[in-house]
Amino acid sequence: MTATGTSTGTEPLPFPGLREVPGTDTAQTRKDFTSDQEVRWCPGCGDYAVLAAVQGFLPELGLRRENIVFISGIGCSSRFPYYLDTFGMHSIHGRAPAIATGLATSREDLSVWVVTGDGDALSIGGNHLIHALRRNVNMTILLFNNRIYGLTKGQYSPTSEPGKVTKSTPMGSLDNPFNPVSLALGAEATFVARTVDSDRKHLTEVLRAAAAHRGTSLVEIYQNCPIFNDGAFDSVKDNDTRDDAIIPLRHGEPIRFGREGRLGVVRDPATGALRIAEDPADADVLTHDAHAADPSTAFALSRLTDSGVLAHAPVGIFRQVEAATYDDSARDQVHVASQGTGDRREALAGLLSSGDTWTVV
Image 1: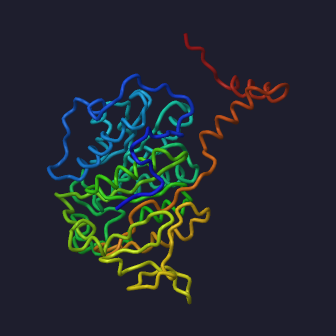
Image 2 (image 1 turned 180 degrees about the vertical axis):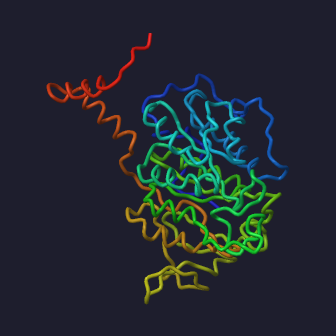
């Protein structure tokens, strides 16, 4: 798999997410971003692969460690800040996007990252997630999706497939699962992507593009839980099935996949819906446009994701567009108000000094 809109890796990554950040004096390595804490996940957990990819990628940003912050919620993935030698916070269940919003708005000199899971982000944290996405705050959200609650020992999650038998659903789940990519596109997120924990190259390329995006980037990462949901993503990992299961999305390229490209995504002329066709004519195959202003086609692509055994799953960058960001706009408002004259400046001063005030010495 290859992502699009990314650096080649041969030049320093441009980082438009920050306006003025002092660079480092010497080249950094993965070791500089590895903390002294023992990594404690179950053997075989996909989190190890994601952590290694992130630690290996962070030096590309060219930022000092004190200018990078990882905020997490609650869950297995939320141990992330302990294992990175950056600033970080293991916060409250589901509230990481809210905390990150405040941080990104008050500190434009920081590269803000959120690490969350399918339970943390899509259950108790659902509202916080969608509002961060619609506001387009400068942050990068890594959503680890293992389709199960791992930390609390194997209950079904908001992304578990229908009929999933777990400790909390002994007769099978009755819920229709969330599709995290569809949810993000429905909130009109400006950068939405999906990747897989075991594909280091693709994962790093997507991280690179997400970090370079100004605004909220959401990256769903299919991540295996070997203890409570082992094999949930075998179809997109196994050599015998992945070619037919993975629908690679590359901006500006026809969406063909399968062995020898025998499958393709086409638009049904009768309904306008997208579907998978065998041996379609080149003229009928949809060309992926991640930069389209209207997210409708990206949303339609996300709906090709099978909610069961993942017979098909689009992987790559679904949407990558530019739009005004909440934190930039908020800072601009404060600047205009503070630089104003007459009534505007007096109104701001009155607001700041109204009510109960304290002087800290």
